[in-house]
Amino acid sequence: MSFAEFNPYWLIPIIFFARVVDVSLGTFRFIMVIRGHGLVATLVGFLESMVWILAVGGVIANLDQWYLVIAYAAGFASGNWVGIWLESRAAIGTELVRAISKNSEHLLADTLREAGYRPVRLSGSTGSQAPVEVILVVVPRRKVPSLVKIIHEVDPEAVYTVSDIKTVHDSDPSLDSSIKSLLWAWKIRRK
Image 1 (cartoon, rainbow, N blue to C red):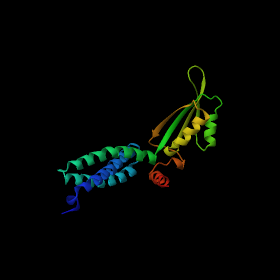
Image 2: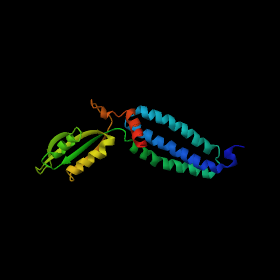
Image 3: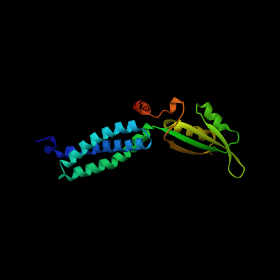
Image 4: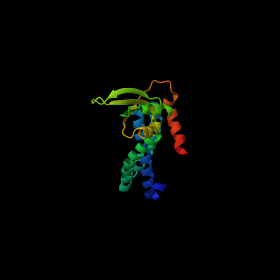
């Protein structure tokens, strides 16, 4: 008689957490595929499939236990949220931040340069001949919150958008979004 046959209720948390891990990894992997991080997605997919086999095997071996099916489904639902959270914490990738400032003194671009960013400044107008400063900044995703904070401090009325960038051709090593970024994120998050 195996441990699971003796007390199948122990399988509830095991299957639940295995499914949370499996689906979290799947969600994270899917986002990495969309962002073009094939190596990271491959490694995560390998782990995901191993955990999935364990979770589904526990349910299939005990299909007469309805509560294990509930644990499996609850783990799936929870795993989606955890996977999205995990990906947001890793903050892998590169972003394009566009800011439009009505401040005619061109303070925003200069302030961003002083803070170590590399903004591109374009002149524009709102149509009513009011001049605006259009700023484009390519940054690693983990730096977006600090960049947005500076934008708000310099011009609280500035309008900004943030877009994912799949590929960047630049000599700036801080924009490298390969596996090194994942390892960096893991190291920082563990502190």
